[in-house]
Length: 112
Image 1 (spheres, rainbow, N blue to C red):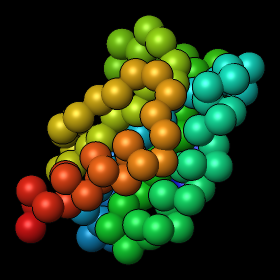
Image 2: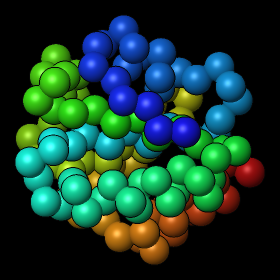
Image 3: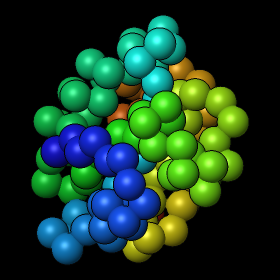
Image 4: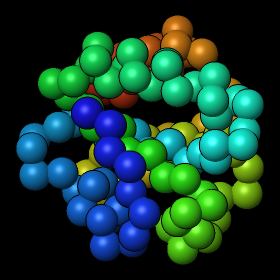
């Protein structure tokens, strides 16, 4: 599932899921960014593939400046991987689907 988040309260709830998901991916983006646009279908695909184990949270930095500032986001796209409300990995820049699938698989392997 992909959720768009605009307020800190909703963000905090989104990274602390009560649905037993193993991982939350937070994607900081902006609609005017070409690399962010290119990642959109990749995130959709990942959301479908890993629907039982992860959620994806999208944060538009233009609409949710407070969240972006609180996470010291300086470049987009930035992708943060959360487990138990803690960032366990971060990536800055465009990442293709193979790369992200590999990162997710590695994280899930280490959880098991």
